[in-house]
Image 1 (cartoon, rainbow, N blue to C red):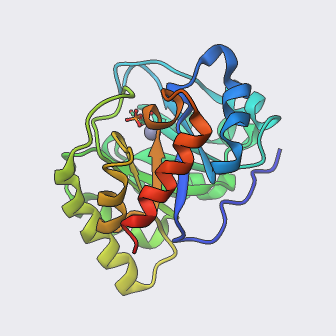
Image 2: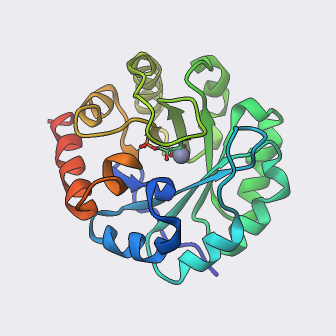
Length: 229
Ligand code: DX5
Ligand code: ZN
């Protein structure tokens, strides 16, 4: 299955994270928020890189039948290289690997080779200098605003300094790189993140833990736009 387009780089994107949805009704959850979804964020955890276990390629493949949005696969796993091919053939649009797993240059090449958009993620305490050397060879930089593993944690405002550094370099060099934040994004923190320079906002609890998920996603988009004004 071919992956669907992520759209032009640098535009505001809302990426609902299904981690906070009811896993018994995933297809319904995805369809409910479709009108306010730019990318669908899929959190993959292996119980090793992070202390939680979630989904893998079979779920990506199944959901692909219910959505035409870009699938933004966040691989919180210790050996992403073993699974890149499977995620690509399951319908991933992008695969984001964590810089903390190491072997980053080879993983970036490998992801490129399997035909997905290439993302690189950094934990809140990983310095900007660790990811900066790869900016010219990736499509997406994900700067975590919580320590990965669980939905519903509090946004870490101190990460905004790193977001601002990345935005400055992306713009100065004219790089086609999306800048994503993930963790604790809600109507209060979204404008803080966009003001600092993020253009892709992942949100789990602020969308799927709300009584009206579609309306919550819409309000999140409006809040994010405030930070761009
Ligand atoms: C955390 C995941 C996030 C998570 C965000 O490890 O990477 O994508 O779903 O959830 P919220 O928005 O609730 O912080
Ligand atoms: Zn995520």
